[in-house]
Length: 216
Image 1 (cartoon, rainbow, N blue to C red):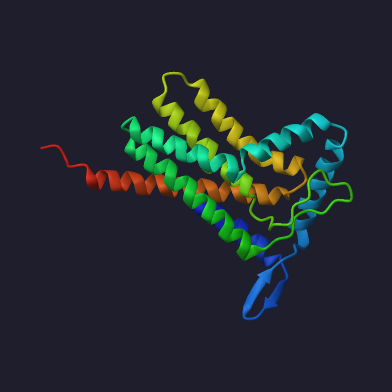
Image 2 (cartoon, helix red, strand yellow):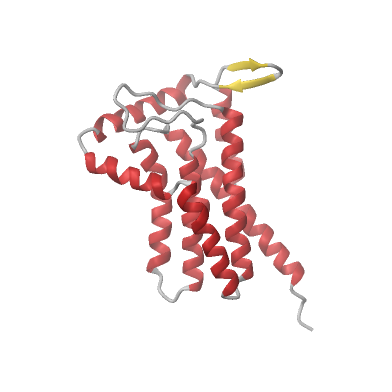
């Protein structure tokens, strides 16, 4: 179901983007129609409101740092190594696959769609990389939400896992608050990352069943 929802949203966005020929490749750049109008209305309202809340901008910038590859990549590697040393190889494999593949999926779709980011007269942050989908929204899911699921499964207390999952989900809205993504970028980031994480889980479970001999 996640794949179907992600595909439907991607098709909606892509069909509302005018094609621009670049040699033999059509590059999609700008949104039009109902989706773009909704994106602009929500993003503008949020951007105007946040100007009166400097602490929200500061908090969104904290999320930006925590969701960056500079922080998330070494954190993922450290968790994978820790899980492997604690004799949890399948959890380690899942975390590693989600993190590495999720980042590659994010960058690939960004380059294929090449959607411009919001442009403001008074921006909090200026970014020029492609906007769709939100890489931080994806990282919140394939990173912190995955960490939270592992924590819920392996730790005696539930609160660390819950905190990690909530933190990961809030990574998405923080990008709209910071004015660097459209709402549909965030939604697509959640859907793509959720689909990828689910796929990785299914593949790891399938491999685990095949590798573990049946009891006699």
